[in-house]
Length: 71
Image 1 (spheres, rainbow, N blue to C red):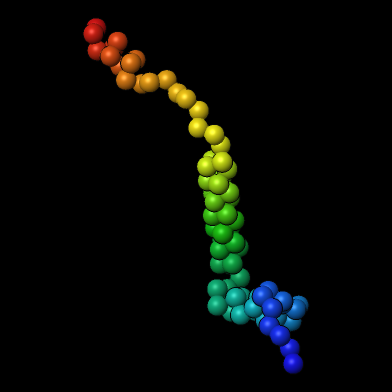
Image 2 (tube, rainbow, N blue to C red):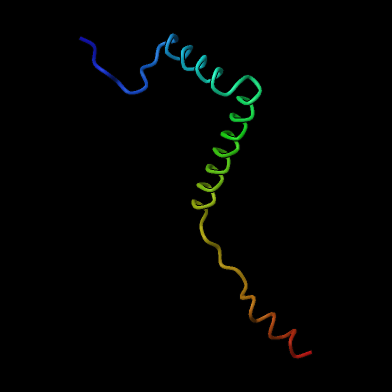
């Protein structure tokens, strides 16, 4: 008896999935899909890095606008 494990794909499984994707989307659409997936992953990583940065104290923008309104 074989037990199922997550992501235990052999080269035959990967080949079958690749053929099915090629039949469904065609050769010209696949690079476009992969490019979109890559940019989505990059945006996700950038967002995670942005959240990890410590919050820095910035100037209060309201104090600079009060000086400009007196002119």
